[in-house]
Image (cartoon, rainbow, N blue to C red):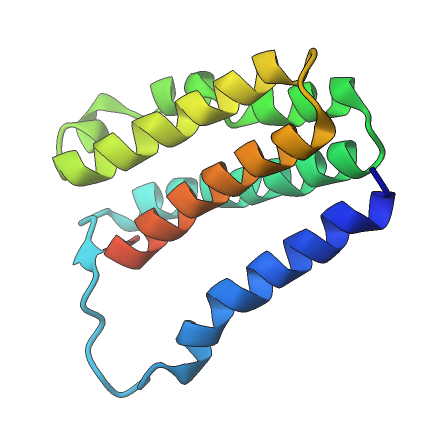
Amino acid sequence: MKPYFAYVLAGLLCLSSAVPVFAADTTAPDPRTSLGMTSEERAEFLSEMRKMLGSIQGILQGISSEDRNMIAEFATQSGNRMARATPDTLRNRLPQAFKDIGGSTHMLFEELVIRAETDDMNDLLKHTTTIMNQCMSCHTQFRAD
C-alpha cells in the first residue's frame, strides 16, 4: 500500500466528520448527554481522550509505513487496560449507553493488536475506520462535563 494512501484517507475522514460541526448553530444548546464529571474527573477523562487520539495517529502512521509492531504498540495503549483504569466512583455514575460504546471501542483496539500480526494493511485501515466510527458515535451522544 502506498504510504500516502492512509494519510489521505485519514484526512478525508477528519474532514467529512467535521463538516457537520462547522455547520452547526453554535447558539443552540448542546443536545448531548452530560457525563456529570467533577473538574478533576473531566481533566483525567480528556487526557485519556487525547491518548486515544494519539493512538489513532500512531496506528495510521504504522499502517502507512507497514510497521506491524507500531500498530500493535499504539493500539495497546487504548485497549482494555485503559478502560479498567477508570475509577469505580466515575464508572458507577456513567450512563450505560456510554459504557456500551466505550467498552466495545476499547475491545476494538484490543482486536487491532491481534489483527496487526497478520492482516492485510487495507483490512487494518478498515478496522481503524470502525474504531473512529465508534469515537464519532460517542462524541455525538455525550459531552465531558
